[in-house]
Length: 329
Image 1 (tube, rainbow, N blue to C red):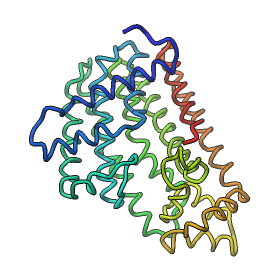
Image 2 (image 1 turned 45 degrees about the horizontal axis):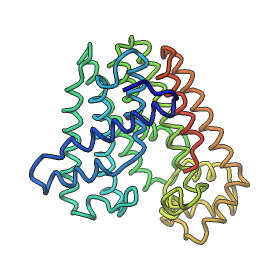
Image 3 (image 1 turned 120 degrees about the vertical axis):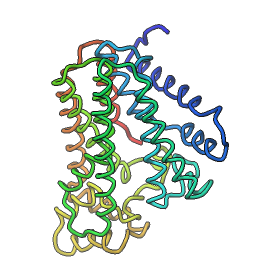
Image 4 (image 1 turned 60 degrees about the vertical axis):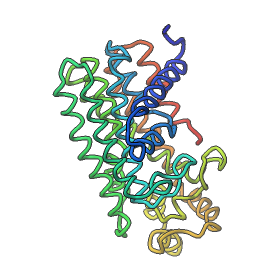
């Protein structure tokens, strides 16, 4: 395969490579009652951001995409495992426009599917040819614990009234950023990056994770409905504590504070009140705060990525991060 001519072409080629590999991981395995839903999850689409970033980091440090591919697949399979179990915990009925596993099959099957996918991710990691195999697991094991910590914090927030923005960011560092940090650092391990560079890559992943989650929170209220693929304001209707809600509670006072407080105390906002919530947040400067935070974390990520050797892979990675900041759905 010839080298892609542009950052977009390189990213697209990696996504295609990942999709092709995922489609064949368990396609010939039995019993169907177990592997059919696994195949269903792996073919469910997605932007493949995490594995693509891993491949780009590995390439930047001189490793081939083929050598790094098992690690990239491990990260993507693990990510999808967490989604299967998240959907059970949240009682979600759809994921990416399709019925969730526990809805299409049943909850027991979904639990088994998630368990198997976590094991499969470790198997894939074991197939990586790296100079320091132990370093791969030194990254992976803490990631698993940190991600579970973030998920537990997120669940506990539902019963807490006084959650701060800082506490929310700490939760993001586990639930969203842990896997991104691992993807960046694993790419460095496969590419033979020295320890100081791996530290910087880990920080870059953390910054990208914060930017990505806050942008997601922002898009929940500002995206175009058709492109977003779900109801605008869904987080508010569901009573979720997000960067926007918590910042509004910090900035509002008096009756306006009480108006926002009911979102979390009453278990959500009536759908017809979403436009008013958007107007109130705009007046309080919540949206501009979120946009500023996203830009700040993207800038921090770029600064951390100064450790990357210059070349097309590094250029493509920076382009991909900027695309995440600029996305509108």
